[in-house]
Image 1: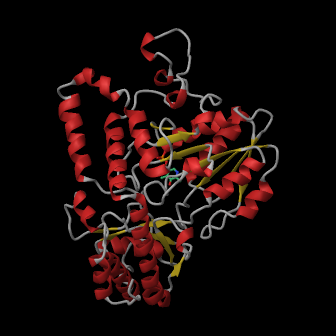
Image 2 (image 1 turned 90 degrees about the horizontal axis):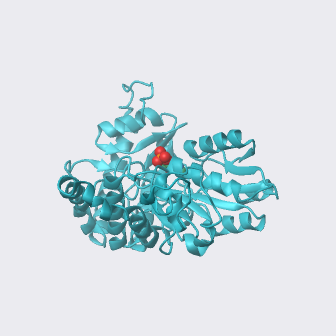
Image 3 (image 1 turned 120 degrees about the vertical axis):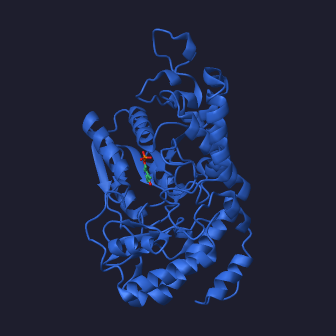
Length: 420
Ligand SMILES: *Cc1c(COP(=O)(O)O)cnc(C)c1O
């Protein structure tokens, strides 16, 4: 790699060497001027997914009608195996695509607590994603157990020492995000899992901000349980179903609390009593979202084709480039880099701190660059390895510099919109 320069021609040199550049055309790009740096919130639409959804709607549903259930019935598992193979390092039969992340968290956390009788503590951290904290608060209230919330620096990510101090033989379950949604800090999955196992507790990882962005090795890291979403880096579309992972040897020991008919052994016997199906199928609940599951399958296939190592390499190169430009141009304007500077400790996005982050993020959207704002004063920028060019990163930061230097965001009303 040539040495960094804050000149546009440098970005063009990086683009010319980009092995993944052709993947740009595998995505729908109606607005070719738009610089989209928010794949960490909603990934773009792959062309093949658009076609496949049309096929499912027109043919499978439109023509096949109820007969199509013959092939749809295995889709949660089939899409799950695809996620397992290409995205999260899980051997077949341990991942299934169903429900939302929130519901999957509830199911797995509840089942984990039942599997550790005599223990009554759940650990999570105060910087975890809201739905994670709320679901665990609810479970603690419903079961009369203790939720021990450890403190995490919102920029640095989970501290091994703080977790070690909080662990004892009352802890049944630890639930943490692999990549922090705000700063993008990446946790040491294998190391933290081992720490939790030493105390005899189960470890549940939330992969929402890592799946499809960083290589995840669930089997190799010894993780017990995981959940993740598919509408961020997996590009499966708004409201696409989540996935869950239960390590094979735990599947027969854990029973989830929602006894729906899709987890019933011999489902269509319509028998009188609940008798869970063997394996990962016992973690399903009701009728799966077929259109969403098809999009998950295509999303995972596309990333598999590019290869996660190549994708991660470009992601690291782009976020490092973004940070270098921020240091050069934005630091004098009141910005600080809130994400870890060490690439190995960072996920797929970069977070910048600024007192006026909220109006700046909106002015940036007005200038054709979509990132997003997170409380209290953070701007998240997530270049997407399969679609974003280095030149776009350059142009995005150039516009950010211009907006901040000229204070052209001053006319943006300060009240926060419903969605940021
Ligand atoms: C996006 C995200 C979620 C979202 O949960 P849903 O049930 O899909 O709304 C949960 N956890 C984390 C860490 C996330 O980043």
